[in-house]
Length: 403
Ligand SMILES: [Zn+2]
Image 1 (cartoon, rainbow, N blue to C red):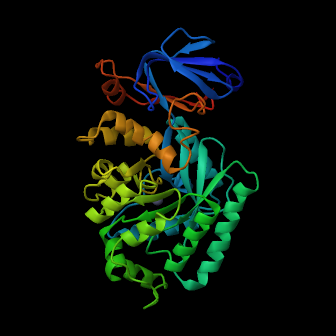
Image 2 (image 1 turned 180 degrees about the vertical axis):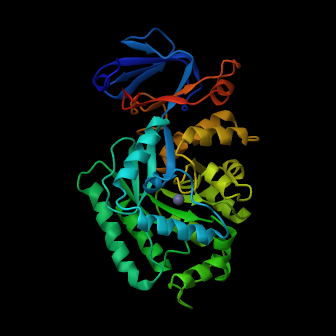
Image 3 (image 1 turned 60 degrees about the vertical axis):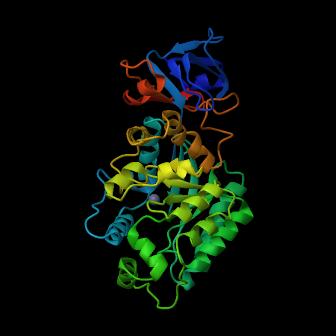
């Protein structure tokens, strides 16, 4: 029987294939773990107690760079009937009616861990206590379209960041929500605060054509939406030529995440190629759920931009299973290599969250965070066997198995 006490001593995990991500796959590989951290990866005889997991792959724990755990109680996503702003309205109503978020956050965290995800970029909307497992980077959502809300939102932001300053191990960041829900001064000042505190910042960006119309011309369904909820104030909002204005703001922060970017111009893709500290977070199955046009993730990678992967919340995805996102990426990869697909769901996410020295690869000194994936027996090629196989069947976090 495997127990939590295993994390305190030396143990070796053996598998048909080990994928360190930082180096090529190792056949019949061993991952040796000591006190919760990886000490070595090799294919020699194990030097400590060894569990041979058989015909499976050991990969770094998956990194979900963007989700909203507060929606984890939803059995099915909220209907995207009609306009995108109507879906936003459904999200707002559900949030108001759902009661305290803690129970749903715990359920979502458990689902992540069960399906191989050991690190999560979470958008937090209240002061619910977050679990330590999986590892969470908590981005406090800031929403304030009217100037009167700016100071109160910034105070919430400061209090959120003080949590990590006060010795709490939780890593915190900020998330001004989106161009149509954040006053330009609130955006500027939350970016200033993220720079001052050196914390990551995430923003939903370029999610729909309607948002791009709103940014460029100040017309369309988002104006109607803001009028409906009583927030539209003529002349109150600065107009910008393009999403580039927002990308430039994000680029002021040492690490930032531009979530979605479903439609980008050539100039915007080139800008992201020159600013790899701004990671685009692509949410493949959420993107598919809304039926958006082709996502530019392959073009971004070709231009050397950073791309990380998220599920988004259960309000737009039937589950939080990152391995299903990986399998969808693999089937749509075109000229992108399978090794890069595996990197996108592991190391790329930990880099975007500023955690690449801690997790995302199987290297000596990193936390022993691993996912165990069923292999297809039909292929001798390690990546074909990995992506053509089945599900995540186990998770190891800080050396402790979660099964
Ligand atoms: Zn989101």
